[in-house]
Figure 1 (cartoon, rainbow, N blue to C red):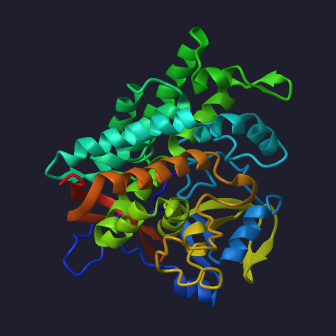
Figure 2 (figure 1 turned 90 degrees about the vertical axis):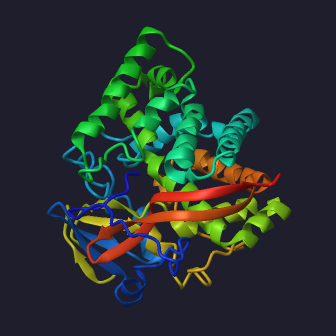
Amino acid sequence: MLIGTGNKALSIHLSTDIAMKDSLFQDTFEEARKQKGIGQMNDQDDPIVMVLRHKDVRKCAFNWKGFKSEAKPGRIVVPSEVNIRDTRQIPFEIDPPNHTAYRKVLESWFKRPLQEEYKNSLSAIISELLDEQLKQEATEVISELSLPLQSKALTLLLNTSMEEAETWISWGVHVFRSEATALDKDKANILYDYIEKEIDRAIEKPGKDLYSVLLNTELEGRKLSREEVKGILVLTFAGGRDTVINFLTNSLSYFAEKPKMLDWLRKDPSIIGKATEELVRYFSPLTHIGRVSTSDTAVCGHEVKSDSRISLCWASANRDETVFENPNEVILDRKVNPHVAFGFSHHKCLGATHARQIMKEFLRILPRKVSKIEILEAEENIEEWGDFKRKVGFEKLNVKLYSQQG
């Protein structure tokens, strides 16, 4: 989902100095989680109670009758997108029982990343990008590796031409954000207009791409409407964009500073599955997502009024010391890892299978091709959520990749 801030500037640029650990992502929510269990912030004059403890996050996520997703389109996203869109993202902004019906017709398509052919195509994309960057003296990871990889991998999920990735790469990391503002309606309209044109094309000349498949999909005896198709595609484009990019970029910073961990993956690829889950827990690329209270209630003893917002703070829950042993350490082969980085309960991320395959293939291929990663320059991306400042990734990360072949 969209990662950003409320009223404040989206990120603070901090130049990396020698003492700074680029791979360190501190737990800014620790004190508030331990003492109160909640945090508070104001998002465009719409206050939010942030739920911080693992058990409370999962409890609220499960309780769709008390905390709904089917609010005004854009309101459950933090920061709210109500001023830049009126298309409902499906099934993200739908509650049961309708949510269940949408998931049922969509899940088979979004499980395609488990197919061997899909994995092989993804592997080829990653290998080609790494081979290209290994020839360079320096790589700006976000623009030259993470963004192209996310965009090219998305062509597999949509089952469309690889050439389309160049258009998506031109949009940059965020589809709803520009350099000038955290939420940019004009930039968002670029995505909406693009999707509208692709739907028109699929209507005129159907193919085997996701647009065509959705237009021909039946839900409870009827075809999906154009607006429903658009809502699914907006979510598909926006949902896993900056989150996947942050994971890939942050992982490179980690292995640059922990070369022995890269060696471990090289020598024992059997831990790649656990390593993927541990890194996504530690980095938690999506800080939180909102819900809207359906009645006057309380969370951790704090009053929550009807029609007010809470947020499920995945990043805080994933560092909860009552659930995770040594939560602020990366333990690549962590045995018990009930993280919520992909959400929880019925709203667990629809694109999680695709995202996981990207991450796993990247961690499988990276140590085979790269012997060493050297950080040359880094600028951190710091989110502001009320009084909380959280590092979510990098605005810029320049590295030198060294080949296994010397």
